[in-house]
Image (cartoon, rainbow, N blue to C red; front, side):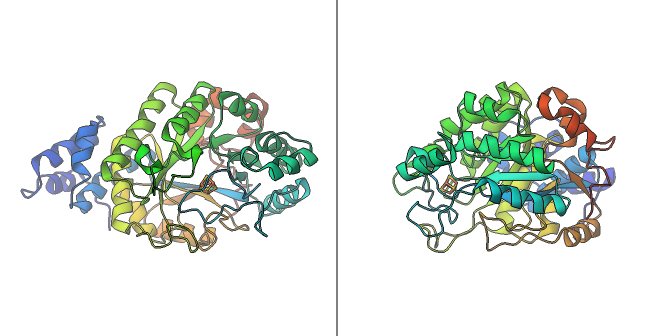
Length: 409
Ligand code: SF4
C-alpha cells in the first residue's frame, strides 16, 4: 500500500463522507500529536477501515522518525532452554530430563559470541528460560558445579565474558526479576527486556496459556518493567498477539506500558509479536492471528504512542514486510546473520541484504542501531550504564546509528 503524504490527500481521505465521525475525530487528534484516550482506542480497534488507520499511522511515523527503519545486528545466545514456566505456546522450553535440555557452558557462550563478532554483529542477545533452579534441583546442582547459586548470577558473568572478549553489547531477556537482580545486571547490559505479552490475569486461569507459568502473572511483569524504570535501564517490552486475549485486553496492555513509561521514560521499543502455533505444544491447534489483525494492532500502537516510541515487528514471523511498514513500524528488531531464532527455529531471519532491498523498495533507508536506541544514546545518556557509556558512544555516529565501519550489510 502506498503512503500518501500531501496535506490534500490526508484531508480527502479523512473527509470521506462514509467515514465514521468519531473515527475521523480520533485520527485527526492523533495527527495533531494529541494523545487518544483508552475508551477511544477501544472503539477504533473495531474499525474495518484498515487503510485509513494505516495511512494515519504511517504519517505519524514518517513525521517523527523520517524514512529510516532500524535493525540491530545480533547474535542469539540461548543460555538455557530449561524454564520454571510452562507456557502453552512455547516450543523452546525443555525439562532437565529432555535429551536436548541445555545450560550453555562459558566456552560455548564465548564461541557463539566470537562468531558474532566475526560477522560484525554489535549485540549479544541473551534469551533464556526463567529461573529454572527454582523448580529443578538438578539445575541448581549444575549451576553449583559451575560456581553459581542462580541462573541470573551466571548470566551476569556470561554478559561480562562476552563484552570483555568480543565487544558485543549484551541485551538480556531472562524473565521476571527483582529490583536487586536487575541492578546486578545493569552494568553489563546495554539494554534489557521483558515482554509484557498481555496484562490480562484471565490468561493465567485454568486452560489459559499461562496457567502453569508463575512468571507470567501480569502484576509481576509490570513490576519488573517498573523496577527497570526506577533503575534507569533502557528497556524493551511488547505484546504477544493471538494467545486468547481480547482486543480490549490488547488496548489495556498498551496503556499499562504507556503508564509506566510516562513515569520513567525508559521504554525504548514496543514489540508487536504474533503467536505462532508450534508442534507438540498444548496450543499447536490454536488459530494464529491474521496479517490484518497484527497490522491493525501495529497501527493502533503507533497511534496510541504517537511518533516518539519505536514500534517493532519481527520480520521472520510473517514475511509481509510492506504491510508492516505501511502499518507504522520503524524497527525490524534484532536480526542475526549467523544464528537462528531459537524461540522460533522454524522461521529463519531474512538475509539483511534482502531486508534492506525490500525496505528501500518501500521508500525507506535501513539503518543499523545498537541494542540501545540512537535517541537514548544522544539524549538520555543518563540511562546508559556508566561502565559501558563511553564504549557505546564510540560505536555510533553523530545520529546515534552504528558507525558505517561496523555496519556491513
Ligand atoms: S515462553 Fe518463555 S517463560 Fe514461557 S515456557 Fe517458554 S521459555 Fe519459559
